[in-house]
Amino acid sequence: VVKASCGPQFGSKPPLKGSVMKNVTLLASVSAFGLMLGGAALAQTELTGIDTLNDRLDDIEEKVQDDFERSQDESRFGNPEFQPGLSGSASLSYAGQTGNDESQEITLGARLRFAQGNLVQTIGTAIEFNDEDGQSTTEDLFAVYDANLYFNDNFYGFVLGRIQKNGLAEEDYAEELLTDPTADATDFVRRDAFVGVGPGYRIFNTDQMTWRVQAGVGVSYLEYGDLTSETEVGYIASSRFYYAFNENVFMTNDTDVLKSDAALRINNDLGVNFKMSDAFSTRVSYLTEYNDSREIESDNRIGVALVYGF
Image (cartoon, rainbow, N blue to C red):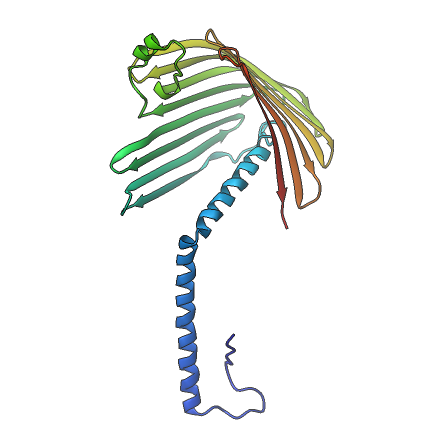
């Protein structure tokens, strides 16, 4: 530890010129040494894997936060109030590597919201490109549109749309089905789109309990790598329920149902949030995914998320 004085202390003699020069030299050396230590510390975070560990910690925190945000439905309480006019955000990330391995990663995300009176519209897009050793490994495009028209605090209408494109989808899906009728179509889907419309209604809307339901009709479109496609009409229904036992404990139960000729799909997410203190929160959830077109129709997942801040 080096202590430096900015001037003579009370009752002390002024330093000689030589002493001043020594102090300046010493401070300059300390500053240069500090810069070297700082550079070394930055380098060591890469070499020792500290950055990798920090990235993993960030991933864990984001997953836990996502679990908590499932219960934070922005439309759960009455008519949501947003900033009038246009608002939004955008982000861009690029990473390139050369040497033993060559790769490039580009991700772009943007969300725009336009609120005017009782109409709220949101558009979101995400683009991801990955390249390794001159070959594309990821070419994904996502886009979503969501519009809500609020007639009053209880009654509203919605329009929602989604499209996903996989530029590297495998081809020859129809040929694959001839040899294996149970083939998984996931890797062959080039475009996956859905659009739906319908009304919604708030049955309860109090600080302690809210419950809204909505239902409508939608169209699903799938295009495969060999350009064969499937279009089907589906019926959608959703329920969002919230109940507060007290100021520290509340429960949510969110249900989504999609019925089409291909399958009946149901997702139900039951969660209980506990605020143990200002620093400690817990969420316990039970997620069920049902699809009657699968050999094993139901998947169930129990989740526990803990957050402690100090």
